[in-house]
Image (spheres, rainbow, N blue to C red):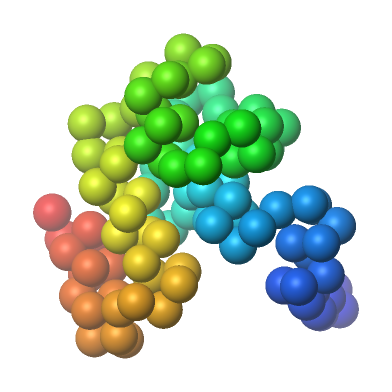
Length: 102
């Protein structure tokens, strides 16, 4: 299968999302750092990312009655920090190692 290059700026433009909304969307559908709420697929995740300006409001208002894990907000904040480059590589490696050894 050939590689497909997706340019972030074009993707955000076509999805009509800010980078913050895209990170919320990515976190809500599940990523390496956070489990998505059961039943939350891309369509509803996209709606929530557009509707709320923070993950806290998304979880607090919970329009679709999802069951978020007790650590979802904390985990989603860590994921946001990773996606935005807040953490350095050693911090990311430690976090991933911690997730798979506990």
